[in-house]
Length: 605
Image (cartoon, rainbow, N blue to C red; front, side, top):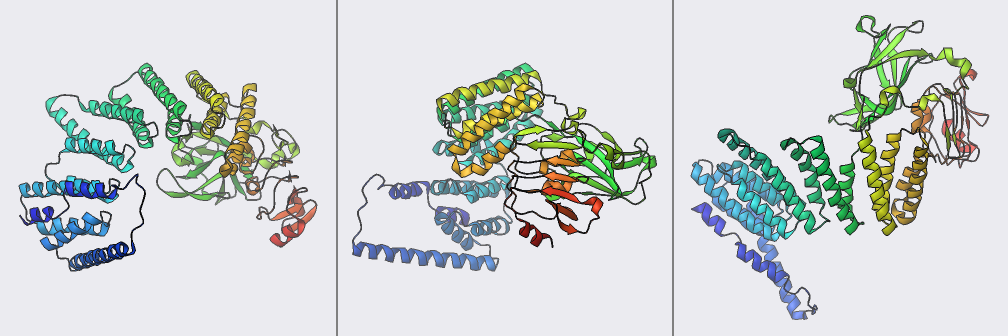
């Protein structure tokens, strides 16, 4: 009975609605400045309310500090939360008061009644703040602890909350929670009755998102919920590939209606991006080389990878019998928080330092198993175990200027050796169907772009689709070169349209020809000479990956400063650091860059 009285002391639903109506009663009317006397009276009333509230909080916190979980403490919490539903410390105290005080020795029926009253109290508070995380959080706690939660009723309630505000992301998150509980309840009932109605819940939720999206295309939460439900719908209905394709085509029709209605709203564009997806990128092991300077092995990938377990280095063709002991480390690696929820070092290039002398070994092999690496992107995979014979770089000195050891990348024209041609294990598995899908969607976006030439979302999506299509063609056709030109054109337009994101669009632009950085050079690890003249490069950190580089032309770029990347550096025929022998000097040509010799000298000496 004490618990009932404490709930009755809370604001009733009608009282809250009355306060809400009063608050907005003046909406749409001209505001009249109150008189001096009226303002004085208002401040006096506010001062009284503030003191009452402060005294109430102080009394409640005294109860909390003394761990007094009685009816009076519960009443204090009720009054405070009725005025300030975001006071999470009081919510925590209220839960403790219920668990260790009022309901400590309660029977099941008493607990059910108490938690039901809590849910009524929370319904009233929703009127004050329908987007309060703490109200939703406490409601979850009540349902988890009450003996007989009514999940179907909760689903109806959250439906009403989303009727008031269809974009209430707290409401959508709570709806996902409720449906997960309801689906488990339905599944348990189906097991007992040998029925199969669980999938109808997924379908009804999918239809619910359709309703909300049709009411307002600018509903990111509904689109996001839809992306969670679509894969489940495929699975629960055990759809064939043709049925999946038909449903996805309907999704593209829906999103097309949305982007044509409001091409500047991001919600539908992001769903479109998810629908198109990204094809799996196949990681390539570009090469394994013996580095006489390190007296170890240098292993190069075409993507940054983290190491889970050491790669096997062995004498012969690759087995544990001839295993070489040693340690792996990334060259210039950086720490990243990866897909496995761990922090680890990532790098394009990995260096193996053996515990034995392997310089005279005639045959060495590095074995890389897919389970031993973590890709830097979720869509990247090493598809199969790769065994790479180790090449002794000393034996290739006589071909230093050949196609495999020289690259020229300048003046928007890329010419390089066979090393940058994708290795056989990374050849694309993109099907003709995907290519057709990409071309179809490109056509749709271009059609919209004719109507909305200044839509940045339209242009960005087009760049993404063109990139995906370019990947499908593997840069081996004239079509790929045309796609490059079109991507650059789109980026140029984006730079003019959206001045706040110029650097981002420049990066997109530069990634196709006008190079800005040198990180890509990890793919060309055995280069001896490289020409990067007349680009837009401002960083040369990629040089550290080129273990065997002897000369690089960086004339007419944007380099203003750089860190030490070699022990010995010869800049435009001027020796900067002399710790390396003359035979190992690296020549860097920097004429036409903002950097000056004085700056270089001060940085390196």
